[in-house]
Length: 105
Image (tube, rainbow, N blue to C red; front, side):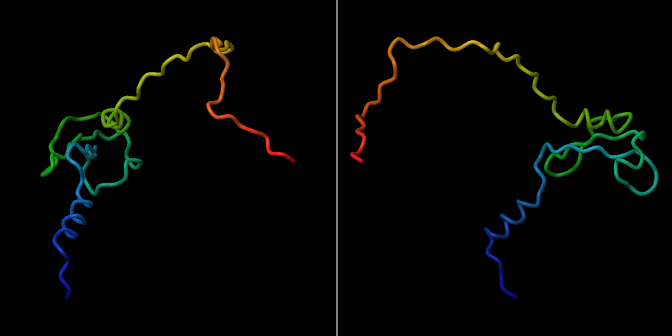
C-alpha cells in the first residue's frame, strides 16, 4: 500500500472537520432520531461545536423557534433614494483623451 504524503492527509482531514462555532438543534424525544419534519413540535436542545465536543447552549420549545435561534438575523432593508430625478449635469461635457479618426471608406 502506497503511503500518502502528510500534507495531503492533513488537508483531507481538515476539509472533513466542522468549523468551531457550528450550531445545531437536536430533538429532545425518546427513540431514534428522525428528520426535523417528523416531530416539529418537540423541544430542541441547542448545541455549539467548540472544536472538540458539542456544548449545550440552550433549549427551544419547537423546531421553528430553534431555527430562529440558529440562523443569524437578516440585515434591515435600507430605503432607496427617490427615482425620477437626473443627477446634476457636469459643467464640462465629456471629451475623450485620444482623438479618434474615422477611416476612409
